[in-house]
Length: 192
Figure 1: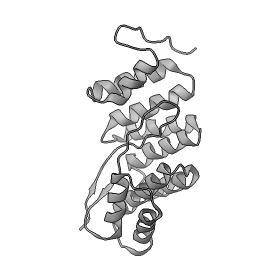
Figure 2 (figure 1 turned 30 degrees about the vertical axis):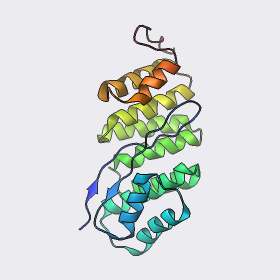
Figure 3 (figure 1 turned 60 degrees about the vertical axis):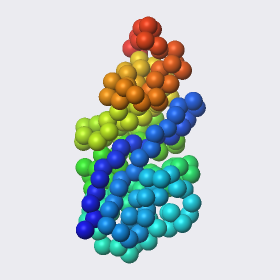
Figure 4 (figure 1 turned 45 degrees about the horizontal axis):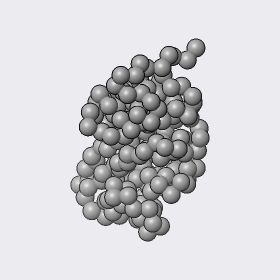
């Protein structure tokens, strides 16, 4: 029996933004588990993608594991900056299991890579509404999107929320510092 263990976000490193990546864990053996391990471990070679494809084409699995395998294959493609192909896999994951928050948060990251920032914000909102297991990563990702949308107030709030949820996480700290928002700096005024 396979078991699905949720993970959170896959962030693209655009400009000076850092990245945090996680995959959907599939247990129980077979190619789907190999695909899960490859995505979790940061593997990007064609053999890892082929393991995912073999699992999707040849293994019987519950909808949650099938959706997770699409997410994992999408992560492998995303890391290679194959944004359109990654988005297609995340679309398939969401079609398979519409309440899989990781599908939305990873598709949002791919949208950032494809410079489709408004669509990424919509996906991060969906992931947060669905209760993504690691919301700090969704807030961080959305902050990156808001930066690209030239909305420093919204980016600031999301980086602060990510930091509140994960106080030891260095990525939001680095973004806030890079943007000049230290502990003693007032947040930017909201866009009008």
